[in-house]
Length: 523
Image (cartoon, rainbow, N blue to C red; front, side, top):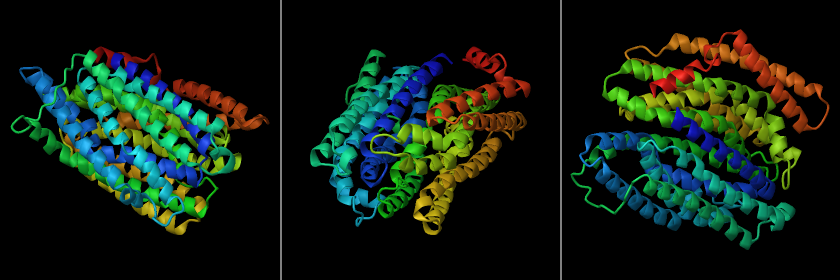
């Protein structure tokens, strides 16, 4: 738990500063079509990086690096050097190709006849070099992860956020977008160049941390016969997994941009969806991702030693521990989504009116956080078995469900409500995916997944969080004052009520942090 807590602390600082960045971004650029052009272009580097190598790095290569360090005579050093060389080579070529074909890539995310298409292409050419720097960040992050050094990967994004906070603060103070609704050429260049520079700084931190951890890299192109074939074969299903997710993202982004084109200044399109989803995923990023990053190597070792009971216990404990924060967070978003949106985004170029759709989207996402987090953790059970094929099929079914439901929202709902419906569709698709994933993983674990205890724990958590949410809503609406005051009062009342109800319902994970101590002892 020690490295996991250190990583969680860094992730918390990163996400906290990230929320400040989002607030300033919305204040400087707003949430309408101009902001949608920047956000669409800024989404593309992460999508393309993930499509190229990111999915393989995050789920396949950590187990490969762990095994190489344990089994190779040189402690896996040559394997690491070859792997880093291969990944950086692929990313360098992919980055150049992406910049060259930027107009064609943008056309996947929005219609070429959209009013902001040309602006989005210009932003994309400035932002697509981030692909290479994202690759450096995550590649060297996995090198550190294989060594049990988790903190740097959690803390490095704070520097990126500091750079962007300064950027958006400058644009808010001296730029013309917030005042006129137009964006001059110099501001486009500034936004693109500094946003990319922030990712470069973030990557440089992990390169330095890897060197300090003892990793000495030199380019090695002797890939043939080096054992990398196993990594590439395992990664092919992960790349397909990423592909189907990116197809779903492209479809939803295209629909959201279409809503922006129809409702130019309503704030009910792509930027609002992005901001709502980022707020919604904050608990997942702090709690679930941090825990999984620390636990995956443990589960991989347990599988290699045929200790299925330990794998099952790690999964069960992880689900129950994350549920302590994920479930009440989901209900908090459900109850206070509109208030959160007004407090965070009704500033600068934003108003209470343009923040309203964002708050409704946050509510639509809300309860989907529970299956989204659980499904993320359950998939790591398959990765511990070196099974990347099953997660691909799970992602395929989730993406198909999301695309079908999002298309229905795009076709049948008014533009003002279409993207809000897509947020709800995303949540429903992950509920479906979680159920299917749990059934398949149960078979892999010899038809045992600690289901009764999980259902009992989550049932109690839902009851406690639902009742606490009602108390918090009442407390917020009793106060006839500023929105921020009501949100603080309601949130405090909800948190206190949840703790009291959790103890009254005898939720074991609440009492004395026994589960945390057990996991720390096991580690």
